[in-house]
View (cartoon, rainbow, N blue to C red):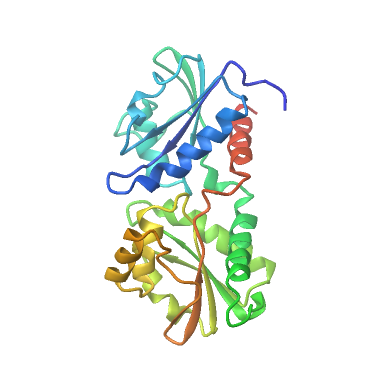
Length: 279
């Protein structure tokens, strides 16, 4: 790879968490992987709820040109309102901002999030195939007899929050590989807790379209799927998977995959987002 970014800095932005350290682990690991490739002069992370904070960008680096990539799934409230304001790209009351701006004397280039990249469709399908292949009991069902459900957070505060999930559902549905493909959300309908009623299929594979295996994917979603909360906490405390694959619920066998943050090609997605921004 050429060294066109040798004098530039890359800052990965994620939400972070005050209650679950794993929430930021994927972003930090991604930054370390890219840093080891020596593509940029500097690679750091910034967070909304952890240190270092988004408000400190671009003072976190010395480079004069700084690329900022949100390590998030969708173009929602966080990427369209919170991050631009915290970066100093707009006032809190403004909805429009420039993706290329001078901030504190440096050229700041705000890129699109990794979760809306075109490669995510293959990632989700690969996650679904992999989790069933790893746990084929009592036998490995064919995709044609399986319902795939892509789950996300969702929020009523910003309609775009669910768009990335719904776009992926349509793209996967168009492949005509699975019996049915649906979206489900934590905070808006169709709810994750209602997923058993979405399909008549005996087999269900659920892929959480989240970056990290943090509080939502490890604790909240298994409980929403029907796992007793005390059992989930007990498994967490003993460092066991909080969902056993497959688990039978309401007459259906359910496989639950991990989040996408450990996908080996995510560094390539980040670089692609940077290249798109300067095209």
